[in-house]
Image 1: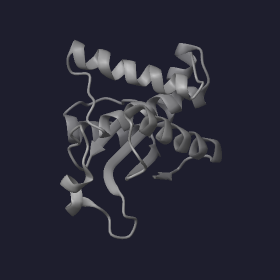
Image 2: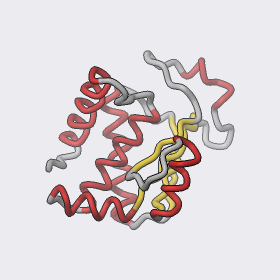
Image 3: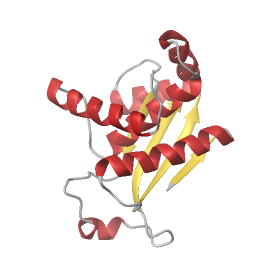
Length: 155
C-alpha cells in the first residue's frame, strides 16, 4: 500500500503498479505500507545533507523504518505492524520533481518513465537492496530491469 503526496493521478496509478511489480519480483504479498512524497530541490538537498552528509540535490532518497531480511517472515516484525492498516511500515521515499524532469530530458525518455524508475529504485532500497559495491549494484540493477520490464516500461 502506498500513501502518496504531491503526485498527479497518473503518478499515483504508476506508483501503485510499480509497488505491485516490486512485490511480484521479490515474491512477496501486499503486507507493506510506504509513504511517498514528491518534493522540491531545497527539501531534497537539505534532507540529503541532514541524513547522508551530502550537500547536493539528488533524485531520490529512501528512509527505511525497519531492516528487511530475506527470507521475510512477518512474525519477526510483529511489533512494527500498524494496528490500523495491518501493514508493516517500510519507510519513506522522496523524489525530486525537477530532477525527474532533468533526467528524463537527459536520458531521452518520458518524465513518467523516470518517475517510475526512481520509485522502483527507492522501493528496492526500502526492501534492503543497495549499490554500495559492484556485486550489490549488479543485483539491484537486475531487479530494477526485471521490474521495469514487467511494467512494460523500457528506455
